[in-house]
Each structure stands twice: as structure tokens, then as C-alpha cells.
Length: 201
Image 1 (tube, rainbow, N blue to C red):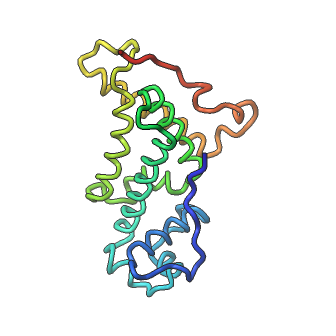
Image 2 (cartoon, rainbow, N blue to C red):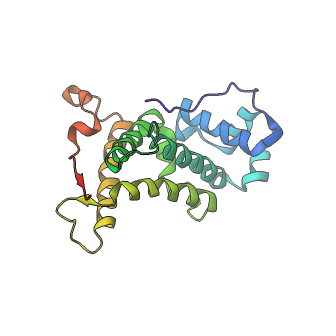
């Protein structure tokens, strides 16, 4: 499954919505050059607008990065639900969510890094918070009713959610950074190492 963002050639951005054009420029820079290359000036140049245009819309680099990160969470949520029928079981939803999480990170390493970089984004951005919460709602859903050794805890669902997130995020980060591409590890996918669980009826 591939969920890279389609790259846009410089000069082809549509400025009927300049904010969208600048966000797309940032996504393209992340995909092509990585997080270190993402600056207000670089986005402006790529979008073909003045260097002051990004500040007019986003205030500063953190504002632009927050908008880009919000778009990343939106796409991550979609990727975690790709191919699911309406009547998908919770086990099927878990399979899609965890697999999609890792696929997204592998295909979008720069964007994935930005999404979890609290020093680069505004944590109180309403758009960013909304999209991040929608993403974590997917993990919350697949954590309900899990049968494991913490099932009888009063906060069992929360523990299951944290367990899922910790494991999938760790695997995703290792994958995105290329740490799992060497030797025998490169043949292992997420469900080759993740435990399987049952769900309460």
C-alpha cells in the first residue's frame, strides 16, 4: 500500500487558495528533500509567491508546519481505514489500522517526523488537534474489547490503546528511519512480530 503525496511541479500551484498551495508546497518539499529543507522561504519559492505570503496566512513557520502536520494526520486516518467494508469486524479494523500506520510512515518519513515534532508545531492549533484526535479515535476503536492480561483493569481500554500506539509507533519509526531494512529484519512486516489478540463478543 502506498500513500505518498503526489508531488507538484514548481509553478503549477493554483493560487485560488493560497493557503492550500503553500501547504501542498510544504508536502512536496518534505517528500523530496525532508524536514530540514522545510522553511517559509522554500515554500514561498516553490509556490511561486512572495516571501511574505506564508507569514500573511500562517504567521510563522510553526503555523505553516501545524497546517501541514494536520494534513498528515488527516491522510494517516484515511490510510488506517483503507479498504475496509462497512461491516468490518474490529479485528479487521485493527489489522487495517496498524498496517496502515506503518505504511504511511514508510512512505512519508519527513511528514511523519513533522507530525510528532512538538517543538516545530503549535500544539494548541485547533486544526491540528482535531485531525490528531480523529487519528487516535481509530486506535481507540480497535482497542475496545481486547482480550489480554489487562482486560479486567478498570481502565482496560485506555491501556490497550496505549499499548497499540506504543508498539505501532515504535515499529513505524524504525521502519521510516530504515533501521529495519538490514539483514533478516528487512523481510519482517508488522504482523510478523506483533501479537494477535481476540476480542470480547
